[in-house]
Length: 344
Image (cartoon, rainbow, N blue to C red; front, side):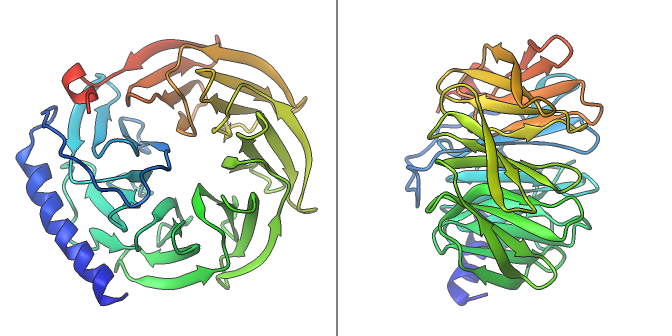
C-alpha cells in the first residue's frame, strides 16, 4: 500500500471519529460544499444486518450514511465524514459493516452496536475510485472495485492490507458478485458493457461475458448457472448462461432499470426502475414480469430481502426505505429519516 493512500486513510480515520462521535443519533448538521472525485456517477446502497434488525443506507449524492432500527423505524445514527459513499456490506457475524467511498478512496469498517470505527483495520485504503464491494464466503477477504484505476483489490479484513490487485477491467463500478461457492467473482465493467469472471483461487481473470447495454446490478442463481443483469440502456433484464458465457435472452421491464435482485428462493428477480418509480417482479421459471409495484422514489440497485423471503426492502432517493409485502406485492410501510435529516 503506497504512502499516499496510507496517509489519506489515517487522515480520514481521525476526521471521521471526531465528527461521528460528536453527533448523537438523529442529529442534523449542515452539509458543507463537497469536492467529489467522481460525483457525476450516481448509485445507492442498502445493507441489512444478518439479524435483520439494522439497515444501513447511502446515496452517492449526499455525504452521510443513515443507520435505521428496523423494529422501531427510528434513526439510530447519521454517519458523517463521507463524500461519495458507494457500497455497504455487513460482516458475516453482523457485528460490523463496511462503507466504501470513491472520493476518499477508502473503505471504513464500523461497529454495528456503537456506530464507531473499529480499533483494528477500521480504514482500508483502496485508492480514489473505490466503488462496489463483495465479502468472501468466510469473511476473510473484501473485494473492492476501483473504477478509476480499472482494478479489483482483494483486501484482508483482519489486517486491512491489500493481498492482491487484479488488473484488466474497464471502469468496474457497483456490480460485483461472488458465485455461491465463492470460486468465481463476477465484475461488471461500465466501459465495454461486459462482465469479467475472476478465479478467486488464483486472482486471475479467466473470461468475460459481453452483450449488455449500460449494465447495472447483477445477481447469480444458487446453482451458479445463471446470471441476471440490469440493462438500463435497453430497459430490460438480461438472462445469462454462465457456462456458455453468453446472453440467452432479455425480459422487458420499466424504464432505466438498475436493480436485478434475486429472492432468497431464487424464484423471482426484482428490478428497480429508476425513471418509472416502480419495481418489476420477474418469474424466473417463465421469464415474464408477473407484477409491477409502484410508489417508489427513483429506486436503483438497492433492493434486499429478509431471509424468509416474505419482505423486500427498497431504498428511495431520499434515503427512506419502502417495505414491500411480497405476498401482495405492495408497499406496506416506509421507514424514513426526519425531514431535517433528509435535506441536503
